[in-house]
Image (cartoon, rainbow, N blue to C red):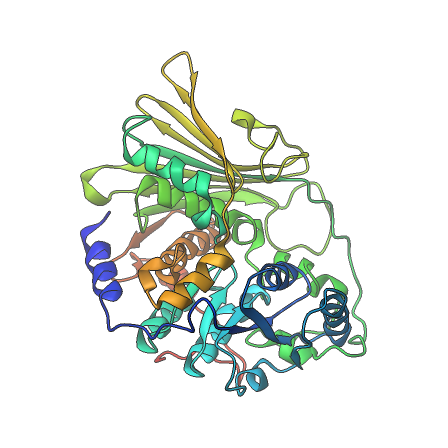
Length: 434
């Protein structure tokens, strides 16, 4: 680990003590914001926990709110408060934490607002839509002294943590390279015309920091991932999980060099982001050069190193990581399985299937009041997000980036540095000083 990052992490973890939430016998009240897709997983997780209450739900689509309320009622759960405007939700004094699963472009601003309102935060991946936001969300967590968990589920995976420890212990020797694989069967999104905003949808609130655009179905539910205004492509959607695992396993922070090529192949549709991408990273910290390769490919896939055959994404997708060392290689399948292959004959070594629970870890850390108890603390999440953003910038500019971590900039490239942030709409500005 780079000395500069180690010192930063040590200093922040040793900051003033956080106030612990109620004990295990007392109730922690959580609000969930953005509840159509991944937000449904948040609701399901908290609903199954002892002494955790879903106190509020927030979504800009009234039909989604109504559906989730009916689901909770069927499950015999207490009816939560409901909100359309996230800012109104934060006025509720009896909410301890906010769990954010809104689109990417809202993550950082909503997390900062929540911390300013005195709430702890669970924020979905990627925690930041651009490089600037990656710094600001960490700065806010430190200033307001709040626990902030990044939605990198693998960080709480029992098997994945064991796999990382095996590499730290030298099971596959000197680990010099990692590959992140995101081969998913994603069909065309087609083309959708401009139309009226659906009844019951607060579209202006949904846009948040993003520029004003006319409404189309492809720029809304889920397909927003494939537009630069809101998403970060599959590299920032599924891929951030594998990028984070690669960085974790290699024991590195910021890259010195990033290069990405790819494109939008096969389909003639509205998608802006690439559906095929290869990003390469070079790390020079600690006196040892290491390499990382990340691949996004859609439609056609194969189960390299057995990834996708039985793990989290079994059934056609190949989503996981492969680490290469001087004594063998290690494959991580999704969030819950790893296998090892040792020696030149690739003989089977240790393997395990064991999931974990990132949401439960968040609640446990709230009860302890200890930042170091978070498995996916926001500083690690933010650094992994920068790898996503740098690769996307490299792809969009068509050239290699030489990143200087000490100045948090791309050396000699004003155009690349200008892409570190965006123009924010009035009322939805991520602050330069949190």
